[in-house]
Length: 317
Ligand SMILES: NC(=O)c1ccc[n+]([C@@H]2O[C@H](COP(=O)([O-])OP(=O)(O)OC[C@H]3O[C@@H](n4cnc5c(N)ncnc54)[C@H](OP(=O)(O)O)[C@@H]3O)[C@@H](O)[C@H]2O)c1
Image (tube, rainbow, N blue to C red):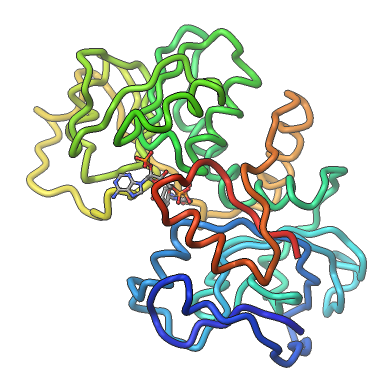
């Protein structure tokens, strides 16, 4: 089969398109014919050698959508069944989705029913699943003033689309490190764009709900822009900082507010189907921003890593 293999950390050019043996099923594991997958920021991190637990060579890819090609669980995962798989150490401890076939533990292969095309389905698992989980944890209400900090990311745009599809009138602000992508953000559906200048939001506004995708690097600044009783969901770490130092919850949390998070590693099969149902019910436009082929994975990484990256990037195999 064709696959993208990485032998050593580095830039997108370290992702090598080549022939490798197609894996064979073994007890408790089944073979998925990969039809597509999203490119995730965490894979860029791993490619750069910043995931200490990942050893090379490795086929990266923490998610995939496809059909069952060979199975050790014919009842739940019959050959030809449409499936989604995410996380569970795929593309990290064992080979992942950047390939024509992926051998995966049965317990992390979720059968799904959907009529979506492969490119759209490929946009959903990790990114929309994360945005959807964050949306639920933010307990959105019709009149909330919502901020997406890190709005141009795949998760940021997915969150906006999920939100807009259900609450058309809600006021949503997005932040970016410059106004270069302002027109794109407005076109995507943001009401307003504010600049995040070195971790300081360039506004006096307060928000009722904040999806924080820059993470601990900007969380305290986010608290200072959160209205009384507001909720902050810290889901991303685009700022490259994992921990919050010198944090005094009593004084620094927004008054009577809440801090929550969402972790896609807590995968529940039914929730994957829930998100497909939500997308269908509210007619969410989940079409990815850019679609690449398997051979073009290095290009897809370069795009997502570059100054013009915007929204969800997928590969259709
Ligand atoms: N909690 C979970 O389970 C979970 C699951 C999935 C993803 N995530 C996290 O969610 C975040 C978004 O993921 P993604 O795959 O959607 O990201 P992505 O599409 O790769 O994000 C790209 C955007 O990140 C912004 N950015 C890049 N470097 C930055 C920096 N140093 N400081 C601030 N902004 C920066 C850029 O925005 P501008 O140029 O417009 O500023 C760029 O458009 C990541 O941190 C990812 O790890 C978490």
